Length: 82
Length: 82
Image (cartoon, rainbow over all chains, first blue to last red; front, side, top):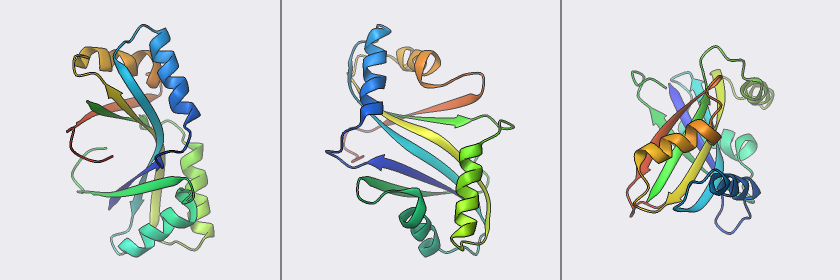
């Protein structure tokens, strides 16, 4: 079973990487960009018997810093390519 | 218009960060994890008149290293919360 986990900074938390990307896009001449937020994306292939609670615990204990980050879990159907 | 861009390493490219996460999950006692791949996730808020071609160019020129990375673009409906 493939699980996708998206880790994003909470609203209000300063995102220097996003700001740097925004600035670089401006420098490359791309106009019309209002805001850029950066985050992490982790794809985990787990056995089918791993519970949702376990996946949630992985996020809370390791993958996301709950003080400044949110996470979202998405289960992928087996047949969809990455 | 909100755009989500997912940047992932191409298949076959070594992913030390993913390996480190996998190892750490094992260390924390999570069993049943077969594989972990890490990637980046960038959310861009652009004006509605920015074309798909422009967004593609942003990915190719700045956001993804086309030698080792793939990218995927996803347009978000305006009303969906991040």
